[in-house]
Amino acid sequence: MNQDDSKPGANFIRNLIDADQQAGKHGGRVTTRFPPEPNGYLHIGHVKSICLNFGIAKQYNGQCNLRFDDTNPAKESEEYVNAIKDDVSWLGFEWSGLHHASDYFDQLYDFAVDLIKQGKAYVDSSSAEEMRSMRGTLTEPGIESPYRNRTIEQNLELFASMKAGEFDDGEHILRAKIDMTSGNINMRDPALYRIRKISHVRTGDKWNIYPMYDFTHCLSDAIEGITHSLCTLEFADHRPLYDWVIDQLDTPCHPQQIEFARLQLEYTMLSKRRLIQLVNDKLVDGWDDPRMPTVLGLRRRGYTPESLKDFCERIGITKNDSVIEMAVLETCIRDDLNANAERRLAVLDPIKVVITSLPKEHSQTLSFQNHPQDESAGTRAYEFNREVYIEREDFAENPPPKYQRLVPGGEVRLRGCYIIKCTDVIKNDAGEIVELHCTHDPDTLGKKPEGRKVKGVVHWVSAKTSLTATIRLYDPLFSTSNPAAAESFESEVNVDSVTVMSNARIEPSLAQAAPETRFQFERTGYFVADRIDHSQQAPVFNRVVTLRDVWAKP
Image 1 (tube, rainbow, N blue to C red):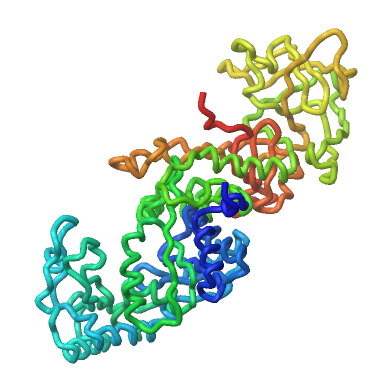
Image 2: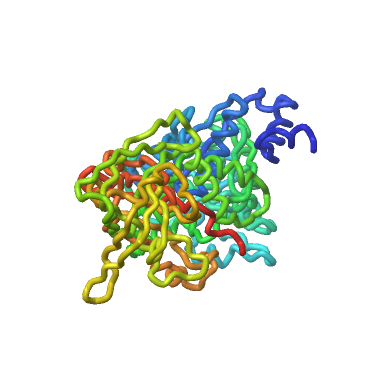
């Protein structure tokens, strides 16, 4: 292992930056940017890019800008801009500069005019279908447009008329003049500007033409003094165009584009187009549905910024595409909450237990630790009464082999309390179990019984003081590990991906919890008070993750 690779978080990008610094490139500066298009909500794939760009800037005492690539006003909105800013801030990052590609529209137009004057750009009047037919294929060269040899004066005049709104959408387009025989299709006279007579959220009706992404992005990087432009592998074939545009023009610097593998996660869809379809077709309950891979959805599910950053650190940065197992993501939040979430008692599917050996008015105060590994978390008082609730699955009238919970005539310990013995099973007219009668051993509070071994321990809540709550249990939204490969991804939506327990019983203190407060419900899992629906009058908790890895291979 070389010295670079021994660094925490070492990867090929950091190694390249180390080499640039040793060579004195960019004067030792490191400036990155996170450049989302504001046409949707951020998802976990964006979190990887956010952590990389902001993390690189922090490591090298540099700067990281947040820039909105807002060149397509038909799909962009201020709603998405605000949501993206909120997500980045929630993750714990602060941008050095806040920019929009639209800040540079005047400069970009001047750059385009410069290319025309150099004879390196021209106005093409071919139809979209004609341009497609002339573009060629991966094995056949393209054909030059009949408008490619217009004079500089003609191109300047037409481009000015495009800007003035004298033509309809699609009537003309400005293209770079590079090489229609290039083996890289992106270099075959790519489009630089198109006519779009549509109002822009920031510039209003000032512009009738808008620059294309490949023209805008590299020049925005150069204008902002970005040193290392980090993007995913699908842009590798665009790098020659990125460099070509900057090389033709007088820009403040020449950023270096570096590509890395994008995030791919099991049982998850990260296509923005398909996420929009999920929302529009009401297959989910909006962008913040806890089953969604959006930052909003993950936040509402109960994931923490620390767990998501830990996840990105664990999977690392590589040049090779790979699919990350869901277990990796869940391990990150489980580790975080195991260390930081206080413990509470909750019964999701309650059945009443009446301890007949106690008087009806019995009330006893017990003390529970808030966190077994953190004494500083303190303790809480909790009332024990004659009637309690336990989980329905913690009793079996006809138990399977090796069952170690409550059975007729059997004993279990109530968590932190007495050992009880089931003496009677009460059923309704339909034969359904509605109540259990038990006795307790008064000598077993905090002590083991003499002469017998009781293995089972079950959690409980007081029937007198517990409150009714709604508990939502979430499973993966898709039933297949690779929904993007499905012929119809909608058919792979897991219709059982959410279970609502509307009659759960919880400790009364849980109703006081602020939204987004996370707990371990003992023996059940990690839960979060819903950031939208939870209230003291109507408590709502979402399961973040189970206590154990459900993805473990047999």
